[in-house]
Image (cartoon, rainbow over all chains, first blue to last red; front, side, top):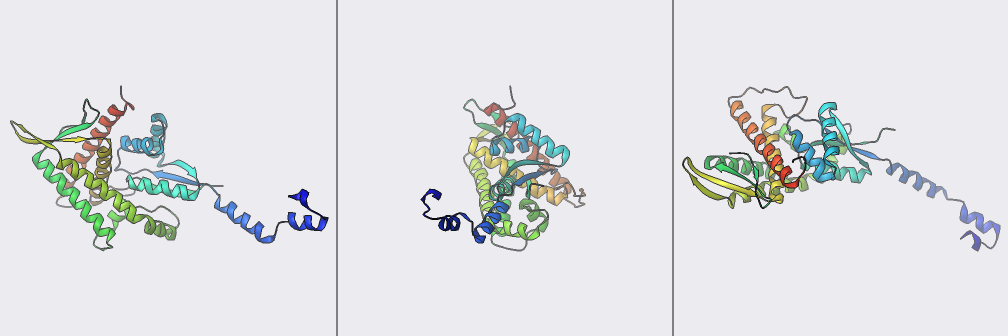
Amino acid sequence: MAGDCIDALECQAWTVPQLDDRLDLAESLTLGTPWNTVVWDDPVNLMTYVSWVFRSYFGFSSARADELMLQVHNAGSAVVATGSREEMERHVVAMHGFGLLSTLAKVPE
Amino acid sequence: MRAFDPTPAGDLSAEFETQEVALFIDLVQQIIGLLVRVKDGEADVEPSVLARLFPDAYTDDPDAADEFRRFTLDDLIDRKVENARGVLASFHVAQSRRTPDGEVRLVQLDREHAMYWLGTLTDLRLVLATSLGIATVSDEGAVESPDAEYVESLYDWFGFAQGSLLEALEEVEGIGGS
């Protein structure tokens, strides 16, 4: 702790971050960039099925699931989740398991 | 077949004619065979079928998409095979009933098996749609082939089965219905 410093020089050495630490911090900030899980429209899957997948996998309410399903259907795609890259990869593989077209992408800045 | 209906116990049931059961089982076994061949790395599976069953996870980064597929393919295949085996199991335990028109099988699904069915019906439709050329929004559609009409009738049949299963499931779970 800063209060434990005996003289000024020691305090300074302790408080000034090393270059390596700053680089690590920069890297972890980059890793923390949020990603989106996107579901794309396809002509095969029934609208009721897509809505059911959103309800049963993401736990969305019926209204929210229908809203996202209609966005997929009408706009061609919808962002269904946002978070860490690892988490979004898990969502994407789950969507593929359900037979939906799904990708992940960095949240646009 | 007739549409799926909720049972008083909260399961879902539908009757299938004997020849429908045979056809369904045959196609599900074909899907399992296809999935096993993909897992074994055999190269005889249509690239368009592969691309639709195991789509790219990254649209603008082919390397990341390849890596993602390498890491997830086996688990995804296992899950799809598990779905398909669940469907076969529900036919296996289905009871027979005699009707004036012949024998029918009463398929009865709990929620777990309904999920197997939804997954496998999707995979069946994706494979059939790929051969019809209607699997993605950019597909031109209407692939000319001698059995296109037959494939289309199967595609519609599985669509009907899935739609009625979802409707019955929603009734049981109290979502959207009543």
